[in-house]
Image (cartoon, rainbow, N blue to C red; front, top):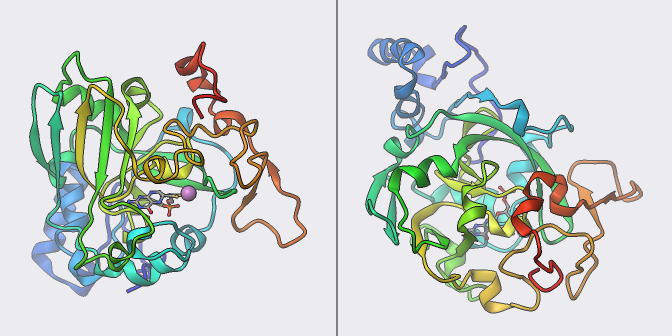
Length: 325
Ligand SMILES: Nc1nc2c(c(=O)[nH]1)N[C@H]1C(S)=C(S)[C@@H](COP(=O)(O)O)O[C@H]1N2
Ligand SMILES: [Mo]
């Protein structure tokens, strides 16, 4: 099943509404529940997922745009954003995740919270999604390979979750672990990376309001190939820092070993802030190609320090960004 844009083709009058297939196929009980969910926003997520994930319908998950955290740049098309992906658990070609990720089972789904934290727990996705109001944020995402996209994500600041689980004063880093299940993820058989995929941030980076716990994009539930049902998006860092399909979040005293940094530390730093002045050993990071923009002869765009998110600069005051790349 490839997820395509709005095959349902109808819109209900509520801005915060969802339109699963059941609605207009006439299941009355379901319709009644949907009507209720327009008022009780908290049940929106369950409506959007439990009832119809299994049927492969596109599930709307609208959220109010946060303009303070959104670029006005032209959005990448949904088709490009869902058919040009890095998600090595489903293969290394850009088209592989779209072709293969239908086997990912995104429900039921839990996220384990562990380590240096006062309230370790296993959070069910339905609860996770309700811990803070969902927002739409249009972020640039810059892949370390030299391409970029502009994507309207849906989620909330990771800091909202972190505050509720209360890290101890020893927690200096946070680690994200992606699902690694061979029965669902054909790429996990390959040895291109260490599995599970692990990423991490320093605690102050994780607490920065830009760091987004993400459950949707383009006003709908995350497509599998984009890291369903929950991922992280860290827009000032190279895309590989934004781990997909997260099953565990661990709070740590020490910097974790992460997937890319672990296998190729000279090429992929732990920090991996977007930085046009620090080249990858095998290619320049000075420019980027915006996916969907023009053809072969379209000039590339200049890559910006911190991907243009200058508000994070104070996190790195006094740090040599050439050393801590
Ligand atoms: N678990 C996991 N997360 C991952 C990856 C991956 O291979 N596995 N690829 C990363 C890379 S390199 C990029 S550029 C982004 C791509 O996100 P997108 O496909 O939603 O644009 O996901 C990141 N998160
Ligand atoms: Mo990437």
